[in-house]
Every structure is written in structure tokens, then in C-alpha cells.
View 1 (tube, rainbow over the protein chains, first blue to last red):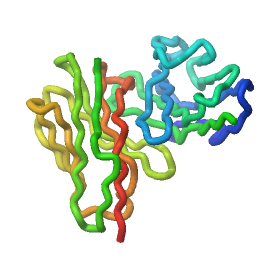
View 2: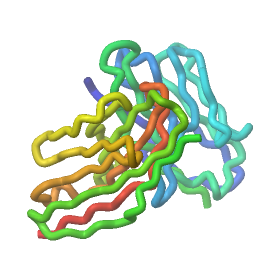
View 3: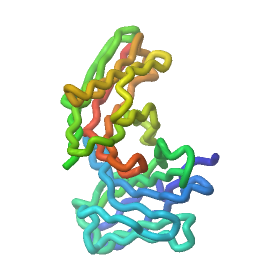
View 4: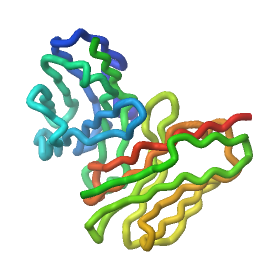
Length: 115
Length: 114
């Protein structure tokens, strides 16, 4: 296992700009999750994919947010017209489809700062 | 609605002391899963344990132990003989579907000094 990989590790942007993050899950992991973590808080669920299908979206995911997993492998999370309130750590995690699903494997996250 | 409460924001101990982290949860489901994750300064969340609601046996893994009590909706975590490497933020989490959609608590920062 090479682990869950996220890119970039850090992103600084100006308010109003669009940003895109990438997540590469562990190979053969069917489910992929996005979470957001603000300072001093626990991660909050945003959305998840089963293969290429996006099966659930949190109410936290406003219209400015869009996530894709086009071929059921890597995923992207795009934020349009960023706001200062979007500043957070964006975490990606994956889980096997069948056995071994008792734990999420997390990436190191993308830290977003909106100025 | 699910809710996880970790009332302790930060705990500071001296190496070799024991430390207990409290976790209280709320759920309407009879089947649910409880987790503990560790987040070291590097930021990557590390899985420690998963418990389902039908298994109230306490568990010990090395210096770590967990006490699950359904009667009080608590799932507490104890680190025995703490070490500096235990310094991290620890999260308790609840899931109703056994997969990856978790409701996390706010976390408890553990600081272990030599």
C-alpha cells in the first residue's frame, strides 16, 4: 500500500478564485470520502463515492463545491469563488469495498488558506 | 441525530502517567459503530479501534485500553504509562453504517512532557 495521496499539501488563494484538490486513494479501494477539518474541530463529512458514483453529499457542500471521481480511481474536489470561510484542511480517505472495511485510510490533507 | 462529545479540550501529563480520554455519544440507532483515531502533528488520521454496539467487551492493545458502556453512552480511551510519542489529538467518532461516514467529536489534545 502506498497510502492515500493528496495534492497539493498547501494552497493559498485569494478570495473569489477557484481551487482544485486531488486525491489518489489506495489502489482497489472502492469507496472514497472527502472531509473538511477546521482548526480545533474534528473532521466533518462532505461527500463520498462508490467507484465513480457520488452517493451522498452533506449539506455542508454548497453549490460552489463539486467533486468528481471520473474513472473510479482518483478524485478531485473543486471550490469555485472561494470565501474566507472555506479555509480549512480538506481530507480524503478511502476504504476497501468488501473485507477490511472497518477502518478509513486517510491522506495527509490539503490545507487551504483563503486570503 | 448523531452527536459525539469530547469534553476535554486538552490534557497535559508527564511521561509515564496514565491518561483517560472521555467520549460520550448520542444516536437513535440500535446498531452503530464507535471509533478512535489519532492525529499526530503530521496531520494524517490514524485508526486505533472500532467497536460495534453489540460488543461491550473492553479491549486492551498494548498500552491502550478502551471502556465501552452503553448504559452511559460512553466509549472512553486510556493510555497507560504515556510516552512523548503519544502526544497528538485524539478523536472519538460514531458511524451508523459501518463504512466511512463518521461523525467526529471535537478531539482532545494530549500533551506528554518528558
